[in-house]
Length: 356
Image 1 (cartoon, rainbow, N blue to C red):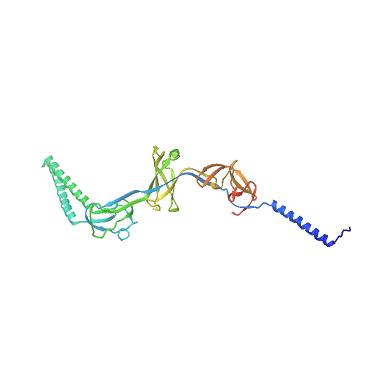
Image 2: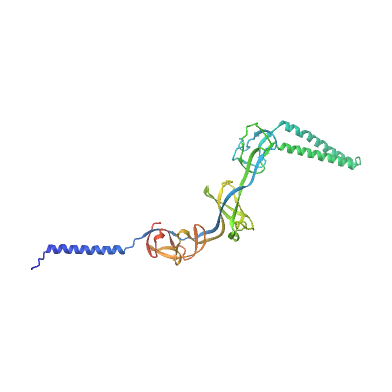
């Protein structure tokens, strides 16, 4: 049988063959092309790192007083001399400021301070007279001593009367802030022992802490402490350890200490719950990376460094560390570009695309 050779059929068959060959080649090329992984990097620059011990607690004022009425009488709240208005919560007081007066005419009358003042003056003159006579031989030593004793008793009586009158005035014993001021109607009669005002000086605050026994050798008096307020996370204050107990509690295996915090601007309030970081070690001008980017491999702690769009594994040796950062003492150098995001799926020599 004769074979029929149709030029059109041959042409179509040849075209299909070329398409199939080119398709296979394209699939092979796509299969061998590696997709670049998007990553963010950081350039290594000299940095500082601190190693610290965290502890929490409540802060208290270094000075605090609650002033109460020492006698019965009528209540009169005084004016703040710096504002011209009656004292109010949050007002700053100075030592000696008169805050409340308690008035009682019968009480004042019974003290008889004017009479005692006159007696004091009379007996003072009598002592001076007897002293002059004694020096001239006109009075005996007994007469002189008797006059001195009478004068001393009169002086005690007058000073006692002054102290009794001072009970009528409620005066600030130190510089501070009014934190409690119970309300009483003007002229209302108070009984002895009623609370009138509470004052705190919290330019310095203190916090007591307890740490495990293992930290005893890392903590010292005067050690610097960073203070963070949970209510104001962007506000950072500093203090120092003022006291440390050398004794270990046998029940909790811990020791006690006190942190003193400088609070000149009164940003931190008494009663606040804070986090403090006791700084134990610090290194400056060193290599510091985020702790979260370290990958644990069989060879050790590993990070990825980008070199010409290729991620290279680097085994590192670490030094100081804290919950967020770690110092690298071997395995990285300044100006290295370290992957900080997208490292989870990388392998050695993976292709990457830097998106920063």
